[in-house]
Each structure stands twice: as C-alpha cells, then as structure tokens.
Image (tube, rainbow, N blue to C red; front, side):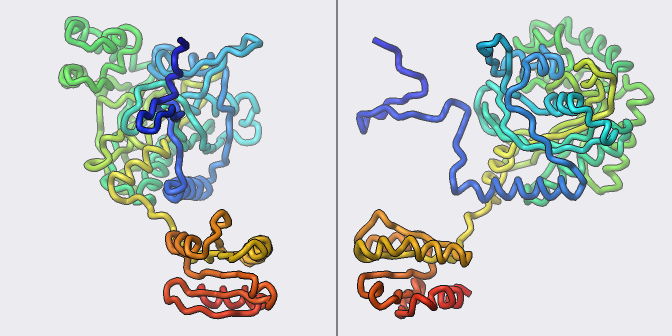
Length: 438
C-alpha cells in the first residue's frame, strides 16, 4: 500500500483527507493584510527618506555563494539551507538570507562605478529549514537595508540602527530593547577565540551537543546558545571587550556616541555575536521586553566588511540589517496592537430576478469608475439572503434593482443604518450615492 504524503491529513469527522500548507510555511489571509501593508508602507517610507534604492535578487542563488559568504559551519548553511540540483548539474539554494545576494549583485553589475556608496533595500521571501516555533518559519518575508562601499565610518552603523529602531517605533511596537556589541576584527578576534576555546576545553562534557561541535568550528557561537546549561557556563567566559584592538574599540565608542546623541537607549551585550560568519565589528539586535519577547529579535544586523573578500573581491566597507515581517506582525498581535481591518463605506448591490442580475454588471462598473467600493452576492437569488450578507459586510447603502426598476430606468437606494429608502433615476445614482456616503 503506498505511503500517504506527509502534506495530507486525515479528517476523520468528514471522512476525507485535507491538504495543508507545508510545515513551517503559512498563508497570509485577507484579515492580516492591513498589518502587512502597514509594515511595508513604513519600511518603504524610511527607505525613500534615507535615499535607499530598491533591489530584487533571485530567490535561487548558487549554493556556493552562501557557503562562502554566510559560512559552511553556520546553522543557516549546515542544517537549514534548501538545496536544489538542476538537470544541468547546477547546485542552487533557496536564499536563507539576502545580504550575500545583494553583495553578489553589487559586484556583478559593478554598481560602484555609478557611485562608490550604494544604499539598497529589499523585500522578499527567504527559506530556512529550521524547527518552526514562535517567530521562526521555514518560509518568511524579510525586509532589509544595506549600505555598501564608501568609507568604513561608524556613522553608517548608527544610521542603520536608527532606521531599524524608528521603523519599529512608527509601527507602535512597544517596549523596544536594543542590544549592541562588537565582535572585533581579524586583528583582535583570533586572540579572543583562543582564550574562549581555552576556557571551554575543560568543560566540553558539560556543553550541549551543538556547542561541542561549535567549539572547534565556530567558537563565537558558544556565546549565542540558549540551552540552560550553556547559558550558565558562558556567564564566566572571557569578555571580548578586553580584547578589542584600538581600532575596533574606537569604532564601537563612536557608534555608541551617535546613539547617545539620538537618545536611543541601548545595552552592551558581550554575548551578542549573531549567527553568520560575515559579521565584524558592530553587531546589534532589536527586540521587545514583555509581551512579544518570545518571538525573538526583530531587526538584527551589523557590519560585514569582509564579505566582499569571502566572495573573491577586494575588501569593501558594508553594514546592514533585516527583519521578518511575520515577526513584526506576530509581536503586534501579542501586544494587542494588531491593526484592525478597515471598515469602508461599502455600497452593496442587490438584484431581484435574472434580468436585474444581467444589468447589475454595468451598474457595478459605473460605480467602480466613480471610485465607489462595492459588494454583491450574485450567487444568491433571494432578497433576504442578499440583504443579510450586506449587513454582515457592514455596508452603508444597498442599491436594489428589480424588473420594475429596469423598465423605469431607476434604482432603489436603501440606508442600511437607518432603514430609509428611496427610488431614484439611474442617471442620478452616482450623485446620490456619493452624497449619502459623506
């Protein structure tokens, strides 16, 4: 007997199988789009204000791009990347993040020739095969801001943090928290990593399985582990602040001075390292305290000056941040700030008889051209059922057309809030509807 597909589920009460969305992927339903549209509109406004041009990269990229750029030993690549082998033998991956793709586009199209400094933003679907939980989906929609090229100036670190923070403020996300750290550079970081490995090497048996592997392959990620026994152990780990070189220390101080001038509160978090290999110097995360904190970080990002070299180009300054729309919307829901679906003053078209139904399409088109929102229930024939649906949709007016009205070239206009109705000539329909909707 053939095995049942894992995307099917038996619904015993109805005796049928139901197709479901793949695990970790979800539909965005009509009632949610007010919140989504609001997030997108605010992000677009800030992008335009701060002169970011929009870029769109392919959902599929060469898998090697992420292996080299993000890091083979990172969870995003080692465990979570969706890989596709084409008939032609290419190994492609659904993008797990978009910074590497944006840098690839910057290099491929020689964008620095237009201007050495490029400010880019994007919005698109990302894919990571991780365990679904609050704030973590296998398919998610990310908005990101990247500043590429120019000079390695803390001003741009602060600007990226500012934009990220102000977007969440404008969306009315409550109790924002900003964590900032520096993970050093290739001058000072190796010394710290060696000290970190020395600290953990006699404690290996007390680490979780993931951290055992990370000790050799990606030691900084030991500071990022959320397992309770690892959290306790890292409290006494060496501090990176003490090992920063003078350049990294000065860079961090300058970023914090900008934040102080902007009156943006922050916490220095020595354990914040982010999960991708391309970061250097500044890293940050913005989350919330209280309701919604279980969703995790909203905006996160930092500086990634070495990513260009990792992709075979010469070193180039760069800093950026990204956020999942799904996470913002979920936090708004948990905080009770989820935007309510707009209640428009809708006009509902009601037909009585087959002749009226045929005439209704022309009337609907006339109303549409006048910019009037309309609803209808063409599939229902009874007047009662149509009026019931008009009430359910919270319509303001009903326009009722029957055989008598067709011959008289008139239409009945009924106020659904006050029950008064009047028969008016069709020639005055638009004028009367607009007057009553004011």
